[in-house]
Length: 572
Image 1 (cartoon, helix red, strand yellow):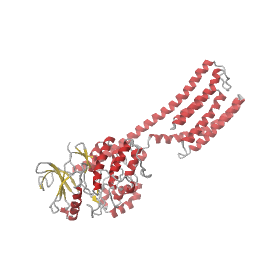
Image 2 (cartoon, one colour):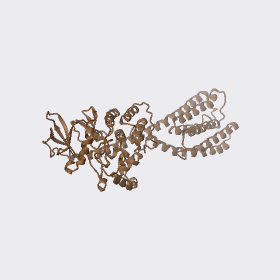
Image 3 (cartoon, helix red, strand yellow):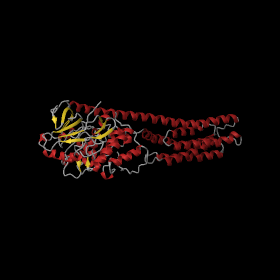
Image 4 (spheres, rainbow, N blue to C red):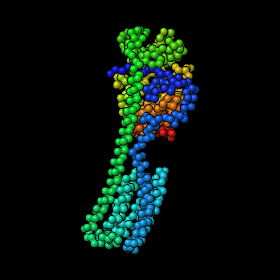
């Protein structure tokens, strides 16, 4: 279905500092915000504490903290489970020593048993200490103590007999450690148990020694002992396999649960965007006051879109070529300075020659009764529409989009033009082949004296660079940030920030790091690091251009090494 570029330079929602600002929409199809930097800063400062204390969790941002990964959930359960087991492991061996005094047995085996149980008990004392805090729980010391305790348990087999019920002790330990995270430790425990038991039982089976255990197998024949040994060793291996399988099943179930929760969040995001789109559609009509009129050489047709700065009409040239004409209502409001700045800056933008920037055909004369701009007519959908239909963009499509948009921004950068309002609504997929940047209506020419909005803050807050939100000097690095924020939205299905009002949203953009992308979806660490640099709060730490960001992103997405140093506080 053909779709027109309705989200362009006159489609702005100006929100001025004051009570009305609190009604700003939260979603990324929210209109461009414009406000006094001082007033907005005062609002943000006064509401900062309230925004943090009262902000309700949303699936788009901080609620991701309540959706830990499967590994995180399992690790949280590992420590208390291990601690209870090790407390038992401290006292049970001491009780076994007392039991051995009643049982008697071979004196040498008994003394070896006492030494082994002391080793087991002391090892568990160390493990109880390590399991007392997640900060102390480290694989190397934990694994070392487990293997020492396992080696000590071989004395239990020697004292009671390798074919006695004492093998249950080792089997229990194997299953228990195999349920944990550390595969190497569990393999080490199995290996010590397996070969240790074989070392004790082997000579007995071969008739080289006798079983001196208090539960001796001296009555059994060699063939019976071989069968028993095969069963015992098989139990060890089965115990390991059972533990690892149980952990895998638990992790899979938790992953599916997390995926389901993320899907619910995606659906809520889409629903919110659809509701806003429907609300916007209700205020549009096909016919406008200029339908059927001539505007310069262009005959105007139906209205394609309306915004705070005017209307967008479908149009045809005298030779019947399609076009889109945007009419500004600034003259009717008596804002002649706005029209002058518009003509001055749009004259520069009209010279941007890139297949990825919407082409400007003509500008009205400075003294035209109704200022207008004529440009190419596009057919397709903008990125916002595509993300409403599918919350996440496939990686191959995202790579193409970033590359093409970055090329358009590079042309603008070389012309000293900053877009300042890059967002999904302003990226248009024309005829299923080419991404085009729309709406340079609030752009800034770096060497010009003024901008289209004077001293106001302009841009869409969810994708606005921190320095732009703070009313500071803006360069092309603000566009790098915005492109990074758009990539974040495409990868995670969520906007980087949400807020119940404009002040809270601006505060988050300036001061609060966004949620780590890998908590919201499957995002490789290398890609996450590239995004962290593109979305750095400090513009000096970002990529020098949108093109360099796109190249680094594409390389990271394809698994190539990207030498980057992301800020330590990039994510929350």
